[in-house]
Amino acid sequence: MTHTAISVLRGAVLLILTTCAASALPGSPSERAKVFATCSGRLSALATRQRALNSPEIQATEQVLANFDMMLDATLPAAVDYGMPPAQARHWHSGGWVEIAALLADAQYSLDAGMAERARIAIDQRIQSCHQLLLPKPPET
Image 1: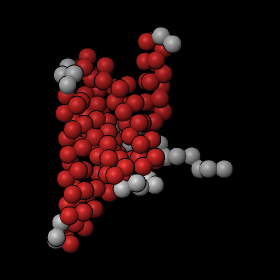
Image 2 (image 1 turned 180 degrees about the vertical axis):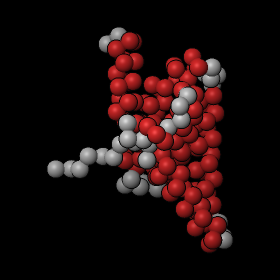
Image 3 (image 1 turned 90 degrees about the horizontal axis):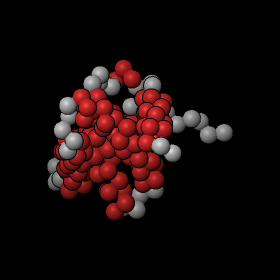
């Protein structure tokens, strides 16, 4: 498959995955890359934790993570053409990872029950905000 065909296919997948959430996505390519990179980082941190705990949810998290990585890959060329430094996506990814990792640490290790609960709520909100950017899974038949 040629590079052009792969780019067109990635663009089509990106369009399909974001159709329902298009109004929630920023207009510029670099802002879209920021959203996708941040969500990728958040999900990567969550997946790291789930792997460490042998969580049964790891496969679903890794699938959503793969979707965000694919959307980021599809968006990066336009974002760079728009003026975004190529390394910026890695910084946004790291920021999302650190954000969730810190909240996971608070939720697990805080001696303050209120702080731990607020951390769990914040994790759920941030992960949910990423999930809302994707089309829902079709019902199983």
